[in-house]
Length: 517
Image 1 (cartoon, rainbow, N blue to C red):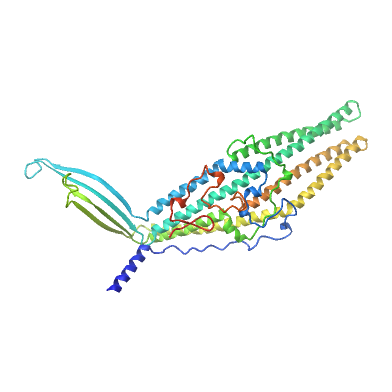
Image 2: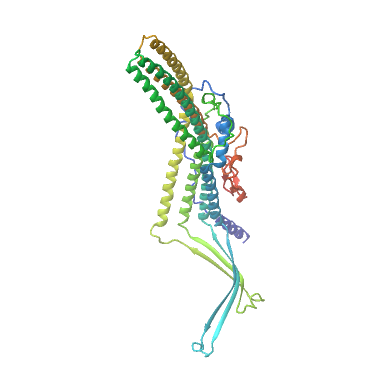
């Protein structure tokens, strides 16, 4: 008999723990090569602001972006950017949704306030011919609990926590992206400033040349063709100046939108584009590192785990649902006797609901859950492939831009010398003004191309830093923050994380939250 009781107790404990109907989660294999591409385009950088052996995720954005003005802009953006604020609030919303789902695992207890009801009959309707009124008073405490034998509620809770993790990683990705967007837009404004300076200098030179040619035309020593060629240079420079002025203003407006407020007047002075001390040589590591570093990949995997848990919930729908409902209180026909001795009342009602026929709805829900998981696998694999491509593109850019810039600098110097020689030949009457105009136009285009290449090199370094998972910590050496918490620069938008709201939850090594129990 004792052995029988032990076996029965073990069986009851097993049933109370619930049956595992979820498929065992297995991370899909990464659909990319085991290493990043190699070749002439991917050689290490030959210059820049130095290198490091630390992975990008361990390099603080202040260390990667040493420009004081840029640092201040990033700090303001982390405090005020509205997209980031929405991402933080989305984490809070999904956190609350998880708490709602988790609450279904526990008994629901309600208290009923004393209730008085009356039921009367008239004298004609009563057999005794007298009118009567019956009263019933009650006060009770009721509790109901769905026993999760087949893990339906547990699966739904698991799906909810994975959705929370996905939202936390989405918030992390939003912050990393914001850091890179502010840096890219700031560098773009510097590039437009330099282009405006080149255009302004070209315009001043063209206007001075036009005055000389106009004087020569007026004195009969220059043809009208030379005059009109000189005039076209001036007008083209004026048109370029107006276009670049517009683009510079629009770039400033875009920067203000990212920062989330008007730019302060006391910002540190800007560092010119060619002297930006952005950290150039960051080790790329292996593609497998991206699985633990890239928040968008972690987000996709969390959603895949959630969809895996949904399959367990859909499978559990084929099995009975058992609910226990009980009440404990007092009842009396008189209000004065409601709490008197002998007025206690109780009830216990177990119920079992088993699906018999629902026209295939349960099977359809299971099919949807399985298809949704297949979609999640494809989305997870696409996130890995996208990350691999972004890092590979960044490495190719880093390996080639130094050579391109060196060649463009030599090309610009040669065009400068060509213009000087063409001016000398024209002044001495040996060559036509057309060669001067052509040389001046080619020099201008070379200078603009040089500025554009400098901008593209710097933005590619910023984008590579983001693609490798950099931008989450503020200073190198800082501990990695959990994905569901805001940084020191965004405290005004942050709230308490799920760890505070649910003390039973534990955090994962990656900084997110794992399941309790």
